Length: 138
Image (tube, rainbow, N blue to C red; front, side, top):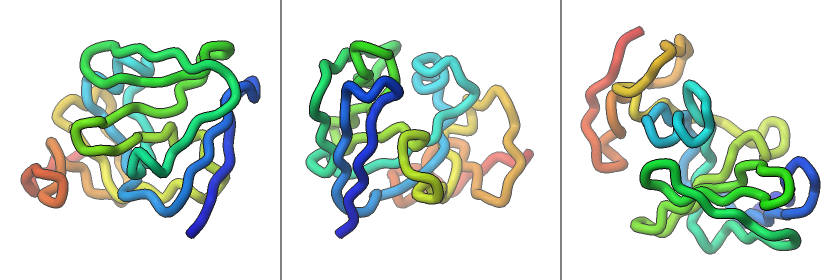
């Protein structure tokens, strides 16, 4: 089992991540875009128990639906809670170089910027995550 140790930009909050991610992806949903002020978000998703925060204080906020936790001191987004399915979506930019290996894009129906790459671009979610195989073509 692999272990990743990482922290926020200021070093106050430390994350310990045990094991392998359930999935790694880019999300284009309106909630992620609004929360991050970005065209899309890089997410590495783990079972909730695999992601532990320690050290500094966490600040929780939700722009629309999803609870997101950040370092209270510097504001670095650390992870989002997907409590309904027992997962934590870790900010993939916090992972060591090479650890983020995205498998596909999701919620491309909300995309504001076409991303042309070799990955599948699902309109919603892929079948393995309760969606259809419908994709967008850029």
